[in-house]
Picture (tube, rainbow, N blue to C red):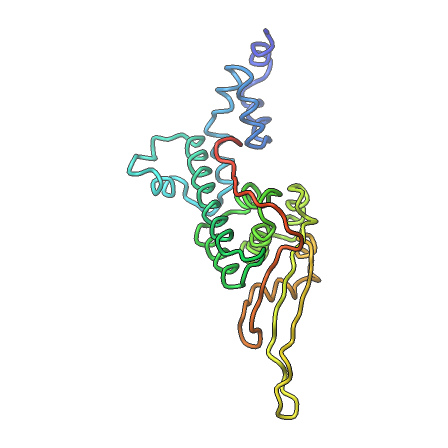
Length: 251
């Protein structure tokens, strides 16, 4: 029972902060529940500002928080409050993207216009790679949502392939499969139009993170333009779908 006091006495605060700064959010919250000293330590603005700026490097969190705060002054908030507030807002936005995909599904398939609209939603919502890992690289959501997130990370956020691969493996979704089909306008042959060409590829998410699968990602990125008449993305194996996302629970 005396252990918390002994930790406080033997460990300088700057060293304790340095150690705590190496933790993930969930681990930091768990540590803060161990004692009053550790709770105060883990509420430090130093720690939460670092976590917030690391997860959302392109956002001005004070400005962004004022957009979801219904007029309250965000300047009086600590960095932990801002982190929780923006995390909750991102969870709501992730749910909107998931609902869009769910509503557009037909027989476990998604047309390219709806697929690209979901990516545009992620862009407009300014999802970070950390947001994607937390909300969209999850085994309990539809694999097509995993694919949308993968495409967004690689071609819009330009996350290095090795980082995407690691995230897929850590989330246990790297072996999930999708089927991409596209139809191309038939070629002209001596003045005659030949039959339209049908192409189909079944690939894992892990495969799509590799350079040799740039053809499939390229088809998805361009959509139905020029000679490509239609693109359809399907679930390779029918799976149950759950659109639940963590909000404050993971904090």
